[in-house]
Image (cartoon, rainbow, N blue to C red):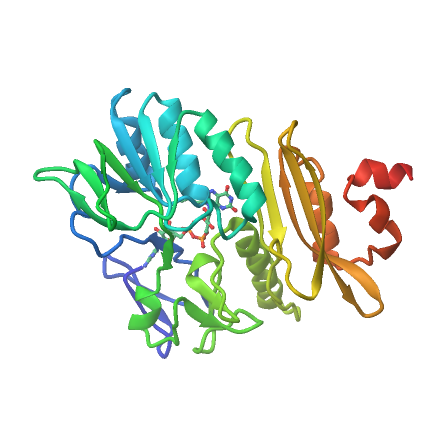
Length: 325
Ligand SMILES: Cc1cc2nc3c(=O)[nH]c(=O)nc-3n(C[C@H](O)[C@H](O)[C@H](O)COP(=O)(O)OP(=O)(O)OC[C@H]3O[C@@H](n4cnc5c(N)ncnc54)[C@H](O)[C@@H]3O)c2cc1C
């Protein structure tokens, strides 16, 4: 679709054909962010979003050097894939811990050890200043003057909701297309879901909230009064042999209590975040490293807000322990 007119209720395709609609659902996804730094558009610099990116990565010669910028989920998965393909990989991350939006300091520390054991160099607090090269990328330069030679640079520093179509149609947009609890945009009959939508100031970058929004919208468009009240985010890292799970308020806070179980020898770590609420205790966040088998059970407790005071003593040991107690 190249344009649509909410007043006339027609969408226009690239061919010029117009399609009339009663309801329009925008699900335009997002674009990978390219930092506004010198060299970010050089050949040899790719993002990690679509098939062309994957083809470029698959075409890299084993033994060549790859620098991945961004130590979130996608950056780590890209670094791991490239290392498995035989490239010499360095992962640069802006923050002082990997997956800083999903992991606390201890889990992130274990993750670094596991990633480095896969042969990937990790550099934290790395502020990328430029990508140097004449005809193609040759090195990533940091603000502190360090340079990391690269035959390929993968940028995995985040996404930007794709709002061009919505903006051109006059819909209210902030970072994403603004929707209310019914997933309605500012224009009657026009809805938005997925990574392009902004709900209560939040733009989601995972499939699960998008699926939940799609279910709500399908219900609404078939005459039911469903609402989207936000989503508890849960994350799994897809790196072989590195089990990482994070959900909800993983950092905790002054009004929360953390239950921690850590076995440095086995390299396992488990943290549950509990908050006292309405006379009982609720699980509001979890971080699991090394053994994530109980992740979905904890996620269910977080999402349902089930009282956990009566099982708190055994909660950290997992579902089987609680069931057997
Ligand atoms: C490499 C990678 C790995 C991921 N792994 C996970 C994971 O393990 N777990 C997880 O939960 N999430 C993961 N994600 C995120 C997940 O893919 C997205 O959250 C999900 O795809 C978002 O769905 P969407 O429908 O909002 O957007 P998209 O899936 O991006 O779909 C939007 C589509 O709209 C099209 N479009 C845009 N503008 C127009 C227009 N004007 N006209 C017509 N079409 C248009 C786009 O071309 C695109 O095909 C991953 C993402 C990437 C890139």
